[in-house]
Amino acid sequence: MRRVLLLSTTTGYQLRSFGDAAERLGIELVLGTDRCHHLDDPWRDGAIPVRFYEEQASLDAILAAHAGRPISGVIAVGDRPTVLAARVAGALGIPGNPVDAAEASRSKKAMRERFQRAGLPTPWVHVLPATATEVSQASSITFPCVVKPLGLSGSRGVIKVERPEDFEPAVTRVRQLLARPQVKAQRTSLTKELLVEGYIDGREYAIEGLLTGGRLHVLAIFDKPDPLNGPFFEETIYVTPPEVPDDVARGIGCEVERAAGALGLVHGPVHAECRVGPGGITMLEVAARPIGGLCARVLRFERDGARITLEELLLRHALGEDTSRWRRELPAAGVMMMPIPRRGIFKGVTGEEAARDVRSVEDVVVTAKRDQLLEPLPEGDSYLGFIFARALHAAEVVAALRESHGRLVFEVDPELRVLR
Image (cartoon, rainbow, N blue to C red; front, side):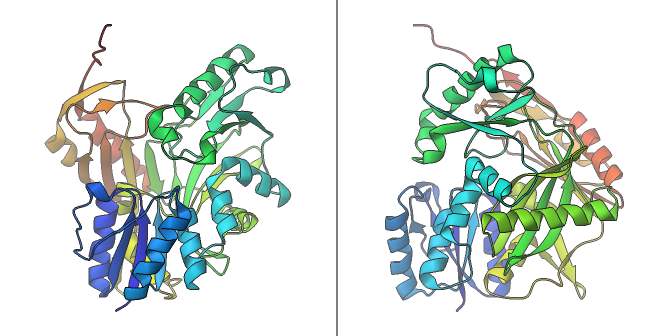
């Protein structure tokens, strides 16, 4: 029995999709998670409890499990498990990334340093402590600039600052986010500093790919048609393929491969972000993990008349299969990550049936739960839900996503605060 270890901080849709893919392939999926108290043991094979801030103890637990159920491959889902995945791969002698490369891919500071050493276009960077009480570097900062945490993902805590008088309030806001108990509970050095860097003008793209021996197989390039100009950077629509010239698409792929090499990444999925503007292609980041959660449903791959999901492709690659002949299916596809309009208590949504009836829309999934506290960026870390669409052309997909979203009405009550 071939086995793949899946390391994850969540137990939602994507893990179920991995489970379905493993069943189709006739392999066993071994789950390692730090959320075992939420786990319903969906594959009835027993999950390995890990703590991503206790890497040695977690590695020991995985190696003990390996003695009874040998592991042939490892996949990290999400940013936090990537370093442990690299340590597991090294200890078991299976394909994976070097530990220092995985660590660098998690830190925006280390990433910028490695990009710069490799000669990649990189903005200027300043690092500030997360616990300082005043900001003394404002005089040396040029504007516009961007303030961001070192390790949070999904644009959380990222703020564009246009004027010197707005710099200190932005830094204070990011510091307050890093001081939150649920963020500090990650017990990582990435919450001890924050980054200030030059703002990069241009259109933003996301790239999904697979590395094998340091060579990149581009699975998809996503356009982000909604401008991401600040002050916050809430992603809404991903659509593929992008309507860009072939030489630009090839250039993006080449820059992602260069950036992955600068970090030292050599094997496994990568999710990268870049901007294409007056200065050419500038890499924002390269993460050593696949696109997360429900968004992965956008990607389907074909070969010789067969069709598979992203999760199945990743499992095949983790087990050493040559996946280079699989190509994303031809129709354009996209997802809208429904933005949170304002802070408040979610009470419900109407119009779902009408939203699903829009031509080219495949599904509408509301993930927000009744009475959940909604919080928009830069502090928030979730969406109201997701809309999926497929059509012949990317423009049709984008139009369908916008029309579908326009038919939804969300009820969000003001947050009640307790007066003392």
